[in-house]
Length: 106
Image 1 (tube, rainbow, N blue to C red):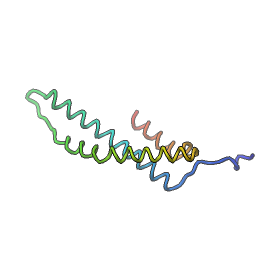
Image 2 (cartoon, rainbow, N blue to C red; image 1 turned 60 degrees about the vertical axis):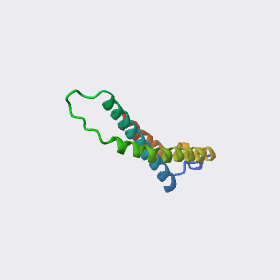
Image 3 (cartoon, rainbow, N blue to C red; image 1 turned 180 degrees about the vertical axis):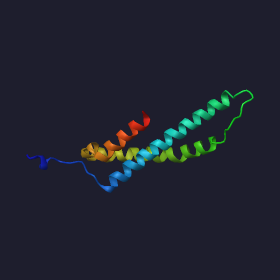
Image 4 (tube, rainbow, N blue to C red; image 1 turned 90 degrees about the vertical axis):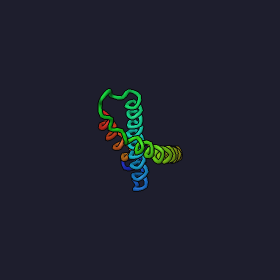
């Protein structure tokens, strides 16, 4: 078997769309969950005599209510697709988005 005969991971536009949307929703859910937690801390331990700039709690909650179910559904769909086609786990698109997420997180 030559190197050209080895199976390659599918690199389709559909995979890019699903992985990119999945990671974008992951970022949205994580950022807004952090925002909700920070707002809860601000309300629990207010600054004495300080300015409370709250008001983003409504935005954070609405983004979580909309983004979380879509993220969970899409993650389950991708997981099912990966179960059917194991080559998707070796996708370069998935690998690049994972490494970009790790760099941003670090």
